[in-house]
Image 1 (spheres, helix red, strand yellow):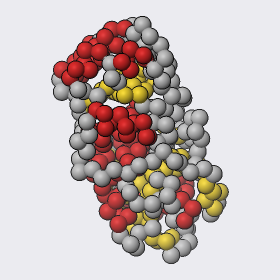
Image 2 (spheres, rainbow, N blue to C red):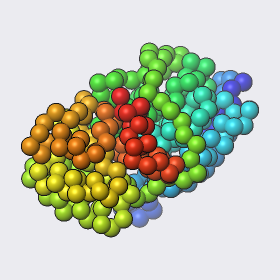
Image 3 (cartoon, rainbow, N blue to C red):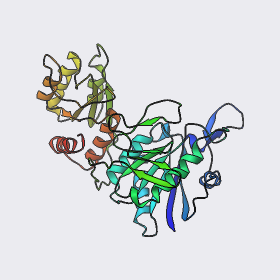
Length: 326
């Protein structure tokens, strides 16, 4: 019999309408979630670990780091064959990516959740949990790293993002595509991710800012972030990785401070690359910024927080982004 650890953290999957009928709040226990499953999951044993019970918009970097450590603790138990984490969808992709960067075991780790609360008649939570448990118990899922499972599909933590505020098939992997799917009792793996590395960190850096470029953006935000203690700044730039002239000038001045500036694109697909001059990506490159490949801004922020927690300097951080950015 396979033995799976179910770690619960709250989120919509564990939320119900409050007694006053006004707000939906995370309140359902892990044991109660287990009771909602209609799939008998024959041959799979389940232990429950109630890690926390909050909306994922309340999860911060230290809590996500602690969650990754808890996952690793379960996987270190030789009787544990895999882990399922129930989590709110708002920040699920961030917690999953952090766990992927910090958990070295090749045992399956599957994040899942719901878009419809537990007391809705057509809630998607129970079927997502059941599918996630089947993935975690499957030998085919070993070595895939951390995945997110929703609506019978599962995706690599590095690539996946929430694409719709309310639809149940919200998680997509853009140009890279899903890793596989669950068809009844079968777990089918269609591709395996190669851009993966696990780090052994004792902490993560929480002071990493993410700033998005918009037409005519001033340098106010980036200068304030740098002067108020940011240890790194992620710029979600235009197109191939460009910024407004004002922001580019600020980055050039910040180069002397040693604060890593990491550039991603606000486009949902494609890689950043220094091509344009006159204040564009070429000038950012000359100022020493780190280009993050096709990582999204929020994934680049998570990676930067882990690398800074390891005490790496700017050039060491650049090398890791070149490795994982694709």
